Each structure stands twice: as structure tokens, then as C-alpha cells.
Length: 204
Length: 227
Image (tube, rainbow over all chains, first blue to last red; front, side, top):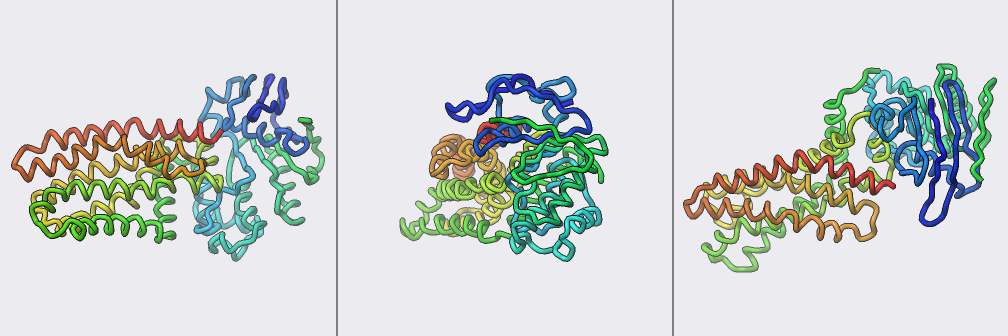
């Protein structure tokens, strides 16, 4: 499904990685490992098409993602370091808008249910600027509940989350894999999905 | 969960930007007040000679509109860039140009339309005739969206740069000179009893050109800025 062929990426004059090849199939999960600055985020951003790789190509269902463009974007979801939520909007509005941008129209009930499952009951209508860092992250991660993307690209999904939320994210990833989804992620915290082997990709 | 259409996505972006503008009303008002202030300073500065004021009115109003639209352009993409929303817009399963067009439209409603509505009142300070005011409004209605659209290219190119605001003005203002010439020319023409269709047709042509090309160019510029 997702195939990376001889990818090379550099930032400035510094070469982060080269000759990187791997494939990821339905139902598989891959953790990208490496020290700070080893190019984990750059790899994930290349997979999103934000960064133009120096060499090599990224192939989705047999076609280069540059050519697929919107067809590829319809099948993937990216959650980065940045939460992409607006301080002035409530959790509910934020979720409806971010789902809308990913091509899914949510009615109020669906969005409320997703936020409640993320542990934000009673805070759906508050402007997100009054929420804590972890709660804001939960609003951003609620998108995992309301999309039908096949490929999830998660950059440090567990940052700022408490133990309960980490368990919930692990459960959501397990459900996604059970639906034959695919996940590629980075984390500095252990992320254990029961009964599934996590593929490892070491960048350093 | 329903799939959204291209038009649905466009409307989503417009509505979102308008809601955000409503919640950050100070930003909108500063642009408008700046416009009113600059225009009002001229009659005070050059004295109350009616003939001279009438002559300079369209130019003053248009230059003030250009400058005040520069104030708000810097914010067009920067907030979305900083909080990561722009990344998500690029990953939307519809063309980025459509989303950009939505942002341009919202920007015009928030920072262009208030100027158009305010202009006739300010025009009275310059003793403009009713006929001249009507042409001024038509010119502004056609011209201010061009400022938002052309300005968006500059905003996208200077995204994330330090001191981007000044650079933005240097990039965009020269491109707006034709709009300034033909929009003020139309008012001059009507006051001297000439035909205005040529001026307004050219403005309309600029508008259509901008509508077709600027969303695409801006989307490409945003992709470059994201790297």
C-alpha cells in the first residue's frame, strides 16, 4: 500500500537520511525511531507531501503521491506537533471544522459524542483557550474518531497526555488496525498495542 | 458522517474565518478606523478649499484603502500557519486553491467591504457629488476584492518571515497600481462628464483575471512557504 523507495532528505546542507526504503501494508503499524534531530518529523512531513524529498519516491497504491495529490489526501490523516485548533472557537466548533477540512461533514451530535469519548464531557462548548494543554491535545486527537482515512500519520501523538488518554489512544489505534487501517508514528513514550507487532524503523 | 463537497468546503472556510473575525473584533475595527483616520486627516491638512478637495478625493480614498488593506493582509495566513491549521488545509481532499479562494472571500468581507460601506460618508467630507460617489463605490466594489486576492499572493510568499509586513507592502503595492489608476480615473471621468465604461471594464477584467489566477498562484506560494 504505502511504499517508500530510496528516499533521501536533507535540511540545509545536513543530510538526514538517504537510501531509505520500506513498505507498509493494511493492518500494519510502524514506529519511526531515532534521536532528536534524526529526521523523524521530516520523514513524516515528506509522507504528507509537505517536503519535497531530495531523491526517491513515495508510492501509494502503486502511484506517486505527488501525482495522486487529492486522492491520496482523502485516504490519509496527519496529526502533527501543532494541534491546529483555534483558541477562540469551542472544542465542538474546532472538531467540526477540522473534520470538515478533512472532507467529512459532522453534525453536532457526532462531534459531541467524539469529544465525550475523548474525556471532554462538559467542556465541549468552552473556548479552547481556557482548556489545559492536555485537553487541547485531546480536542485535536478527537479527529481520530471521526474520519475514515486508511493511513494515519501521527507525530508524537502522546505528547502532553495523561495515563488515561494514552490508554485511549492505544485503544483507538488497535481499533483502526483491526479495520485494516495503517499507522505510522513517532513517540518517545512506549506505545503498546495488544496482540500486534509494531514494525520498527530506526533512522540513526 | 457525510462527505463534503468542494463548495461545502469553500463555505466552511468562509464561515470559519468570519466567525473568527467576529470573535477578534478589535482586528477588524483597527483596519477600518485606520482608513477613516487617514482619509479624515487630508481635509484637515490641506485646508477647506472645496475645488481642491473634490479633485483629490478619489485618490486619497483609494490610497487609504490600499494602505489599510496592507494592515490586515499580514494576518491572512499567519495565524493558521502558526497553529498548524494551514498544514491541515493542505491535506484537505479538495484543491488548496478552493480553500485559498474561501480565505480571500472572507478577508474581503472583513476588511474590504467595510471600506466600501464607509467610503460614501467619507466622500462627503470632500464634497464629492452624488454621481462621483456612485462611481467611487462601483470602483471600490470591483477593486477591493482585487486587493485581497493579489495581496494573498504576497501574504503567502512572506509567510513566516521576520519583518514580513513591510516586505508584503513592497511586493503587493506595485501590483495594485493599475487598480488605483483605473478606479480613480473612473471618478475623474464622471466628474468631467466623460464616459466611464472603459475604466470600469478594465477594472472588471482585472477582477476576473485575479479571480482565475490568484488562488492557484497563492496555493503554490503556500506550498513553497511550508517546506
